[in-house]
Length: 106
Image (cartoon, rainbow, N blue to C red; front, top):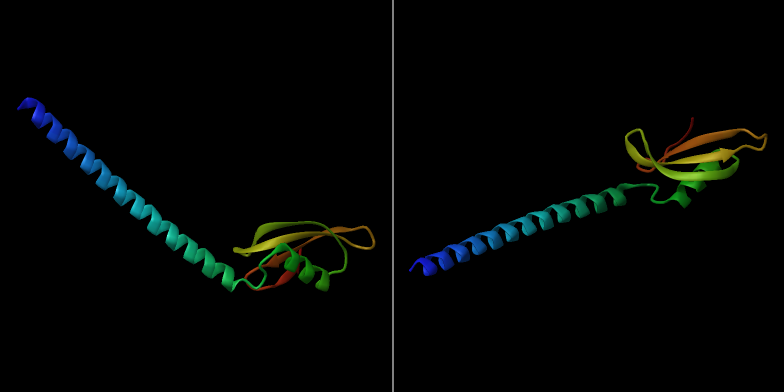
């Protein structure tokens, strides 16, 4: 009788653990789905979606040789920082706001 009771308690514990694990997996899957959907929506709203586009916009507005491009935050939005070298040897930075497409020199 004591052994049977132990087996039942162990079985119940395992079932409870499986149920909790299933709930956790479901919660994580739901959160990932929401994140991926939000990320997808954000990418669709961006006017500049890659470094090459950021370089094109920067070079169109400011002449110079591109030295470096990297992702950055611009006015709280995703964007790019483009490092340029002017024809007279001056190094300067241009920020490209990916959400609005605005280009500004620092």
